[in-house]
Length: 148
Image (tube, rainbow, N blue to C red; front, side):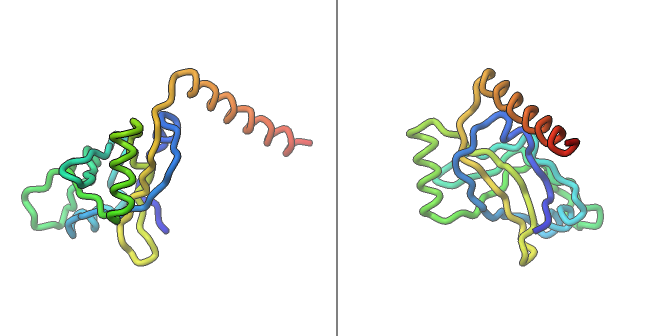
């Protein structure tokens, strides 16, 4: 598994309760561009349209040797996900007020591009401070144990 892009702010801004791996509908030149590690999902988000999930605002740089003249680097890309998982996600969005957040993009063992998405709820400011304190304490604890 080769990681292409990570969204580090996802775990900081959201409390992730469920992780799901999904496929993406991409063009050939986009896949070649991803092999060069020229993408970002930092400001990407997932929205539901017509019973399908779409990845929006995901930046994939234009491949230099491609013959496609029209390539929008932030176009919407369809997520490939099973019907059962799709219904569970859409129900959680509409009923419980959850958000679907892209966490990471990677190549699987077969060479296919996959997107790890999480179902999460937004954190409040005090939750973010508490998680930051816990993270810092764990770092300091590891340093103290290492030095002794």
